[in-house]
Each structure stands twice: as structure tokens, then as C-alpha cells.
Image (cartoon, rainbow, N blue to C red; front, side):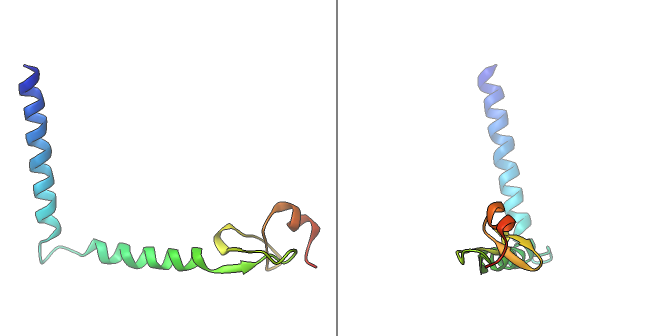
Length: 84
């Protein structure tokens, strides 16, 4: 009984994987990977853009910086102390 259940689940997963693989390769299917790649590249460029802290000058990714009055800061403490 247990073997039959495990075999049934394995066959179901195998069929699901094969169908998914063929569906992704269909010529008429929209290319989801290309859209995902462009969004990932845009996100990576935003995340990798470095800015200097207005207080100490340390470089950090813009996505991690705290901003006030259009100036980036590396921490809440430097945000509190303000620009030099």
C-alpha cells in the first residue's frame, strides 16, 4: 500500500515536471524569463548603485541608505547628527 502511494506520487511529480518543461519551450508561449531577467537587471542596478554617507562618507548601496533632505546616510545615528 505504501509503495503504491509513493510510486503514484513519484509518477505525478514526473509528469508535472515534463509538462512544465514542454510548456516553457512552446514557440507561442510568452517569454516570462525575458521579462523576469530585465526586471532583475533593473533591480540589481538600483541595488548596486553606491552612495556616500553625508556624515562619514562611507559607501553603501542606495537600497540600504537612509535618506533625509535628499542626502543619504549609513545609519540612524548619522542621520540624527546630520551632514558635515
